[in-house]
Image (cartoon, rainbow, N blue to C red; front, top):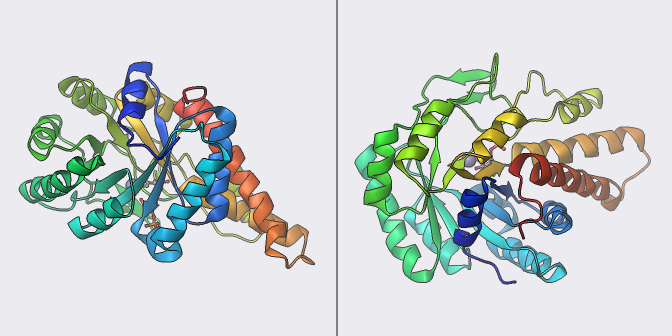
Length: 308
Ligand code: G3H
Ligand code: 13P
Ligand code: ZN
């Protein structure tokens, strides 16, 4: 199967009350780990590339890795998505480079400017068969252990106006999640009433949850046990993600959990095998850790096993 526009994945996910996992990719082992999990679980998957990933690995390298993964198991439906595109030009370059989906993130802009920027990307993307995700509202953030007070939850009525006027195909909403490993200081809480209200006003419309890593404590403990310092990390509980997937959320973004899986595994290997200096010796278990984590997510959080 060729790379696909994610439309059909989202239609099926909406109707089937599950979500598609969107996993960030930065190198070969991460692409392989995710794709092996999707293949074993017979699940559709979205591989997403941030501006930082593009800068680190290069767009062509990442696209070629994805192409290689597709030939390993052509039965897995795969979309390649730009994560948090900040400008029209970046979205255009990714569309021209073969991405099947892009996010234009104008969430920091005033409402009208966010609409205008999103509309500009939509007008370039749609004639080329590319899906456009946009964002309205600002995600909360706990950066370096400091809670970001600057968050704005998505207003349901504004969401409807935004979708109608911008023409975006899916919308990332702010309901209490945040990026990174430090999402909640106290008890985890998401605004499900708000999510329900947005979903009711936008029937059959796919919503997106960013900042949706669950920060598995086993990885945090392994990092800390083997010389790391990841104190107080906390993610979104898996049952909350499951609940969101059963509502209008059709795409759930995961990056931090991949970083933790890789780092925990490498830290453990380095301490337990100080004699090793062949990168394959520690990248192989790291890739296996990504695969196991993603397979667990697909099965128990997204609910997308068997939907390929
Ligand atoms: O939402 C942000 C993603 O986790 C990507 O992070 O820009 O460091 O690649 P990055
Ligand atoms: P996490 O930091 O929770 O993994 O979120 C990733 C994300 O939203 C990518 O866009
Ligand atoms: Zn994000």
